[in-house]
Image (cartoon, rainbow, N blue to C red; front, side):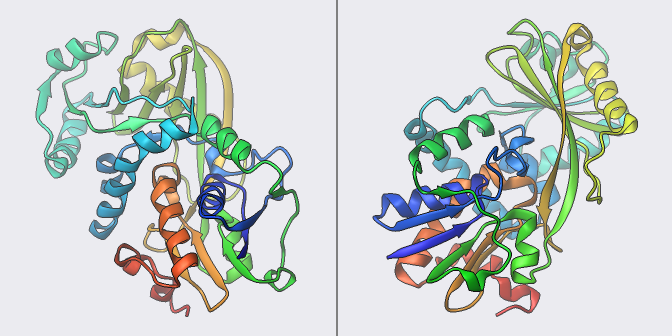
Length: 337
């Protein structure tokens, strides 16, 4: 069997790898030789099904949780991809931040910590932090390392070519082109802009991912073993690629309010990416017609959902039958066959 995967981001590559492992003759079409245009290049790599559920509908949670459970084995098989299972510490700085956070912590069934207890876990937190909650099952990976590992496994099967018309590709096609899926399929996938900063300092300032709110500004801080800390991310209904003073200000102010020690870190990178969003902010995974399968629109959850998306799409390609988990994510929910 021969299958073409259109899209060389983390979703397309994960699907290509899964098909290859099942003996499929797969070709991945990636328009960028550098391959840094996708949302994965900007993503922090938080594997946080609980934290992300606040932005989604309840039927997405089982898919998020199922993929999160796949990640330990998935990361081990890929090699060194920055996998870390230290957990996520959510924190709130002000009374208003805490009132909002409590609703999400209750949804996740997390135990609320005092500010002092939160600082016991992370001494670098500001003494102004009022409260926190610890999610022990949340993890992180480095998406750039994940994509590099997937590319190595698909060596010789990635073609750097822009696909503008699916009629030019013979046989079965999986479209996993992120925001570009809209032009190829007509599906309602829009770009959601996100600005992200990367800082660098001495390793060890933070031991856990910090997911916090400071005076109404939401920020996450994702520490890497080498001293890098990813600070993100804005969420803007825009398609431009401008780094804005307001976006950088909001991220840095919230980050420094929560962790004052970051003031001495060097800013090493600032980037913009576009999450592929859908009208209900849940992914589109399923058959568009007898020939074309779509796996796109993962919005904030592309890295987290890569393993389960790859497994479910491969099953659909090989058997022609969709797993019950995919019922809620069919293209048909937007009036597409």
